[in-house]
Image 1: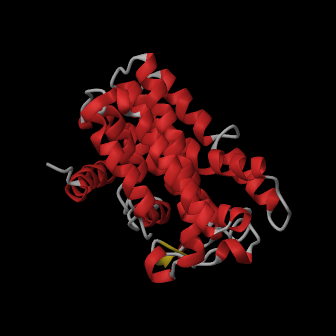
Image 2: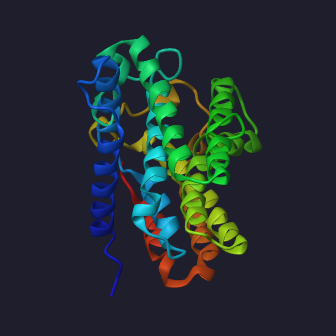
Length: 289
């Protein structure tokens, strides 16, 4: 029997959304505007890929959904904060995200900045309550200057400039892949994965994360606002360093496919319990948004 990814995603999204609703302050709690802004972006839609990868990482080593839900929510809050800040005029200056006006377009730049800050603070509060110190350190490294933020910095510095292939890979492995790798590893860590299993999960996460960003770059060239939920072609307008720009679309597609196959190979020692991660790998490659 083939794995029903659609049912798996729907069930896990419901669990994550319900948990996010519990953990976020109510929209009318004072000061109401900041809580409205936080909820506006968190519940704007999205694939919930990172929290679902936390869950899948735990399940791959025999862990439970309930045990890792706070950490799954923390990863989604960190991801959402990064999107709010990315969309600001000082960064990517985008008007749409997930098919809706960006946070700063609705609430203003000051509240958008504070909403992102508040989501990051809440994320680490959840981690402090529910995860080990090792997991907290893992997430902090992936989200910080040696991970996501570091990648964003080099991304900004590289706009409009010729870059080497190693710089392009640095941007993508840090800006995007670091948090995706961290999501899988965090779930597996909480579930008590052995060191060799954790290494395999981390290797798969690195490959999945880089493939995700390459596909994202391709979709920015080929997609539309309706499909992507954000303005297409923004990478080219901002002269960003991307795989399609450097290698061409077809070579980029082949690279993403090879990365997905490498990720699946890394998961081989985990056996059938890693089935959801393998299915998510295919989803990352084939997605249109």
